[in-house]
Length: 103
Image (cartoon, rainbow, N blue to C red):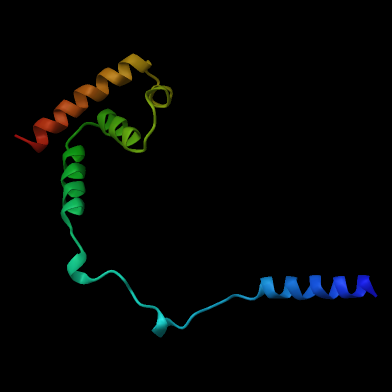
């Protein structure tokens, strides 16, 4: 008798896990208001990408790997250069981007 009760409880539990709980779309309240939106970060990203567009292909690859939070060891292995060379090139690209963004 115990085994029958246990199996019934397990079956009911499994069935309840399969059902998807939904809410009505009308009851959901959106918390983001139109006046709270600030597009300064979006404009800064557009400026950065337009500045990166002016770089040559190797410098672009270096910047995009850097923006993906790759460390210099991974960047150097990907590009086929030494780690020290990757650091030097990245510093030169950063100064080049500074001059492009702040003439």
